[in-house]
Every structure is written in C-alpha cells, then in structure tokens.
Length: 83
Image 1: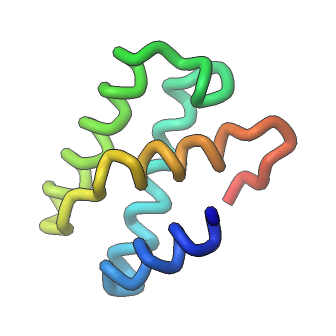
Image 2: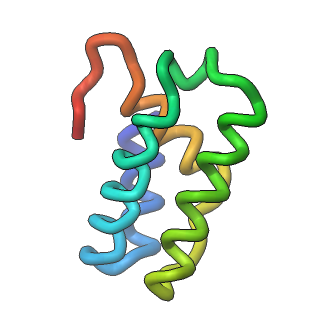
Image 3: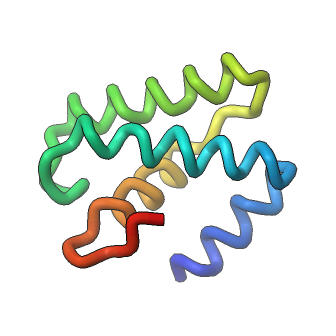
C-alpha cells in the first residue's frame, strides 16, 4: 500500500516539487525523537504545519495530512531507509 500511496502522491507534483517535499519531510525528522506513531499529537500537527508552510513558501501545493503522516512514518521506521 505504501508504494501505491507514493505513486499516487508523486504524480500530483512535478519531479522537482516531489524532491522538495521529500527534503522538507526529511528535515523534520530532527523534531521527532521516536517513531512517528509514538510522537505526540501536538508534535505531529507541528510537523504537518511546518512541511506545508515550506511547500507554500516554494509555491507548491500543500500535501494532504495523511501523505505527510505516511512519509514521516516511513522515515522514522525502526531500521527504515533514510530516503
């Protein structure tokens, strides 16, 4: 399902916009010291807001909240890939 989600979301953006989304979400991993599911609701909301603010600053459409949650879950998996 994650591959399907990634494919559906990636096609919403031009390649450079998708790369910016990946970068902005990766930058937010420093704000969360544990797996995404264990982060507080407040922390998760702040990360979503910061990612979408960065996208807006670059004039890129905001990402749906569930997409950011999916991305952060993948980034913060134990033994997960850093990409």
